[in-house]
Length: 377
Ligand SMILES: [Zn+2]
Image (cartoon, rainbow, N blue to C red; front, side, top):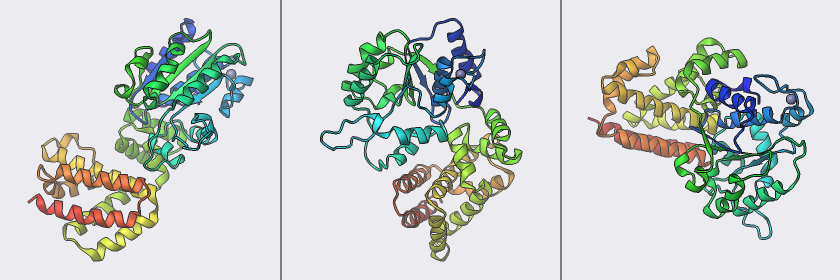
């Protein structure tokens, strides 16, 4: 990951480059913002830049020995810490290093991944992620080792909000006064979930989602996506890069989702089992990710119907065809059922994510949607 690979974020990039030019790199920095915006990508590109032995004005060189090691995330002065699931095995320390191979694979495939993606990698299901006190001890141990290259020693902590008080307390002193050249970069989704003792010791960099235009231009230029599809995807995901990648790899266009949605809503409304059963079967066979993107599409569509109901048509993010159906369908979604409808679809998404049997989840959801659609009148 280089600065040039990051979508948008020009302001943050310039800010970070200036820190290096002015020789004022803070020893503890926090990249915070919504999922899918590029916080981890920025921390990684910045780490590469700091460690690069032949850095240019705007980016790392990519060819020096240090850059080569960063390519495979195996630089000895670049450490990663991230939440895991406690193993529960006696004698085994709960440290991130146990999952380093999976972490490298995930991060190398894309630094825009979500907490859910990582939980999938760990097969976490309903178990809680955490950064245990063992991990804090492991970080402190790493800090006692001499820096390999002699310039910077970097610790990227992804999702520090998963630290408990004990873990945080162990690290406070180091975060406040690390040794020379040691740099902490924390990457968090939600500063409100972060312990105040940690937050107060970090310089905050807010990282927002890239704009629709930045995202679609990037998809066209770097991924060879055709213009129409790139615009459609960027529009739909509202700047979330991870969602954009997922949508592109799901191979199902919004158009197919739209056809499915029309069919599903009509069948739900009339409780038409002859359509609902094969439809659930077909979606189930398309795979879990595909069911998830379909349900996300349904949620998006419901939200747009509500916006339309409140007379804000100009704000709706729908294509012409979708808007035509929405104008007929929107009256079936109103204050009498919208909250529950949303909850029902979110619950289905959650269950499918947790590996529940998608066919049954969809059938059960169809019946609930039927009742709720009837309630709107
Ligand atoms: Zn380099």
